[in-house]
Length: 84
Image 1: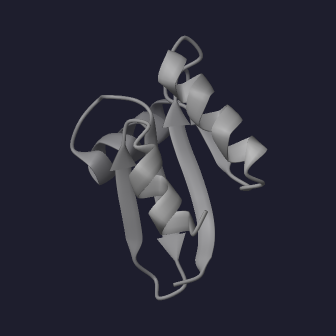
Image 2: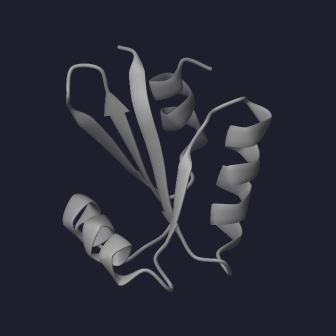
């Protein structure tokens, strides 16, 4: 299924958030980063989508209109979803 969007909810001090962004950049994946430490609307979105406060949270929008939510830097699951 083709990907239509990729959003990361993260904080500036989160080590796994940094690793995730570096990994995505290295693999040529375009993403939007939302800093939940300073953006309260983004924090609300993240909690609504993931049901928790842990970061990073990746929200992958698929062409069929559904979303896949991945909590943490689950490289195996992300690789499968992104086809890399």
